[in-house]
Length: 446
Image (cartoon, rainbow, N blue to C red; front, side, top):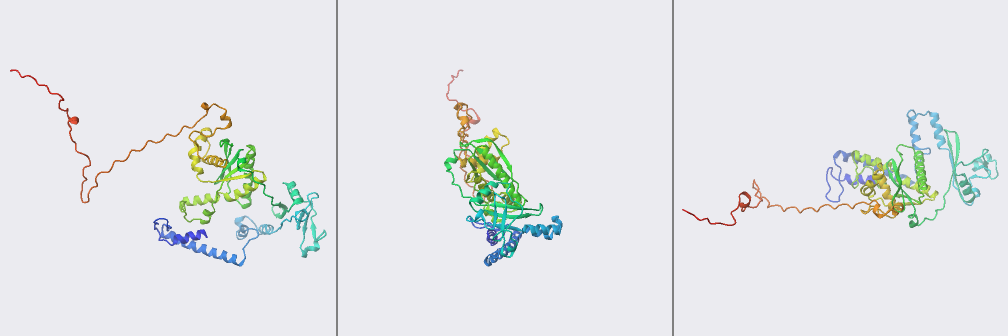
């Protein structure tokens, strides 16, 4: 809707017309306006189709994935035979899911797993009740079932609360998998002043990588800032989620290594930019190479998914997440912190300095660096004040001289300008010696 609104607003202006004031600017050329008009019709038709489906209460869902459905018409490019594709299609549509119930035995009425005996039972529907091998229309699998990862937590949750189970089939490995999930009660958040008394780990999210820096409570960096690669372009959804989990696990390990009690991130959200698409808004680029690079960078920043996954995994690890304002983070980092950090570590980048500013904001310190130096670390505080490194205050620029007043304006119709200099005046002291200050009379003799 935002993209269609932008096309409609700009399409109503004349091509090449520049706005006077805050009015909407038209497209640069008539060709661009024609292309945007065609795109507006396509967006309007797509929006109308979605609204009609929502009004009928019918949502088109492809069980198995739209990508796998499109591969059916391009088996040669996908490298699959018809039998392989059919098997993958049927297995992706073959699954069983049952939500948990807290008041039922082992946390679920439809699918039950006994952690002590290791058996798995499924409640069969009425048409298949004749296949049951247990009372009350239940079927118990002949093979044992278990959880190799966090099995003790699943057993504790099944004995005390509700558990959701998902059964799926992997055609490549020819195996059935059982997954368990549940909702945990939110733990009481620690006071912000308490968290600021301990080190924190700050993260600067960028396109293709993360800049990570550990900070002491006084706002100084601990060790060396690091760069964590996070390239998610062109990957499947499950693969991207796996990469996010691996990176967040690395961040949690870094926080435990520095005895950090919280993780600090920026409150970034590019939802408006993604919704507007290629339409011009504000000062961001819209056309050409700069526009394509901007949209590619915005799509490559996993801000929403990274923040949600980080909050979930950090909560399981007992680490709160502090969100700070992202305004002027990179600018103040480059102005105040990049040069001091490079003095100790030459490979420091502007993203590392931005992570430092993010961490300082999470600790309650000012983002800009004081001209008299930052607060000293505990190791520096023990040294004499004369031996501590300090930053000299920046010298103020010299005041500018006022401009000379302009001369008289040349009247219209004249070819040459009037002279602007004053008369020469007395030039005796400039071109020739002046007259003597004293006069002496000489006697004349015959």
